[in-house]
Amino acid sequence: MIRRLIKVTAQQVIILLGLAGIPALLTVVFDWEWKTPAEFVELSAAQSEGQMEGLLWVDVRDPDRFEQAHVRGAIAFQEETPGPALDHLRERWMPGRRIIVYGEGSGSERAIRAGRLLKREFHTQNVFLLKGGWAAWPRDRSVESMPQTISPQ
Amino acid sequence: MIWLLIRTLVSGLFIVAGLLKLRDAELTIISVYQYQLMSWESAGVLAATLPWIEIAGGVGIWLPKLRLGGATLCLGLTVLFIAALGSAVVRGLDVSCGCFGTSDMHVTAMKRLGEDMVLLVLCGGLWRSEIHRIRAQLQFEAETA
View (cartoon, each protein chain N blue to C red):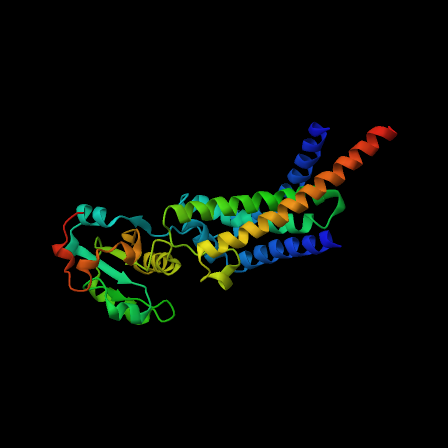
C-alpha cells in the first residue's frame, strides 16, 4: 500500500512539475536577464586585493543613514534618482578602478540592484558588493576613517 | 468545510506568491541570490522555475486527480522556504523573504519564518488528509478488484 501511495504521489508531482517546467523553460531560454550581478567581496579581501585608494565606494542606504555616517569618499546612490550619483561616479571612475557598493547588510536588494546597474552603465566587471554591507564596516572607522588607512582585520 | 477553507488559503497563497514573483522577475532573482546559497546563474534558473512550481502546486490542489501532488509540492516548497530562511537567520543574513514580490520587502526573516511555520502546519494537514483520501481510494480499488 505504501509503495502504491508513493507511486501515485510521485506520478502526480511529476505531472505538475512537467506542467510547470514548460513555461519555466521558456522563461529561462527566451525571457530571462542573465546579466551577472556584482560579486560579494569581504572587507579584508577588498583591502588586500586592491589598493584602497583606488576603490570607489557607493552607498545605497537611505539619505539620512548616509548623512549619519558613511565610508569616507563614498557616493550616495539613490535607486529612484541615480542620475546625480552616476554623473559623480563618471567623473571619478576610470577603467580598472574598482567600485564597491554597500547597503545596510549582505541581503541588501538595493546594493545588488545598484551593482548590476553600475556594471551595465560602466561596462565593467569591477563592481563588487561589500559582504555584510555597512554592518560589516568597523564602527570605529566610519565616516572619519580614510579608506587608505584601514589595515586588514 | 475546514479542508475547503485550508485548501483555498494554501492554494491562494501559492498562486498569488507565484504570480507576484513572475511580475517582478528581477526582484525574484535578487531575492534568491541574496541568500548566498548559489551562483547568480543558478539563482536565475531557480527564480525562473520557482513561481511556476508554486502556481502548479496551488492549482494542483484544486484538481481531484492531482490534489495529492499539489499538496506535496506545496509542502515541499514550504519546507524549502523554511530551510532557506533558517539558514539565512543562522548565518546572520539580513534578508527579506521576497516571497510575495515587492509587497514583503520589509518583512523580517524571523517574522516570515514564523508565518512559514503556520503554512507548514496547514500544508502538512492538507497533505495528510490527501494521503488518507488516496489510501482509502486504493483500498477500495483493491477490495473491489
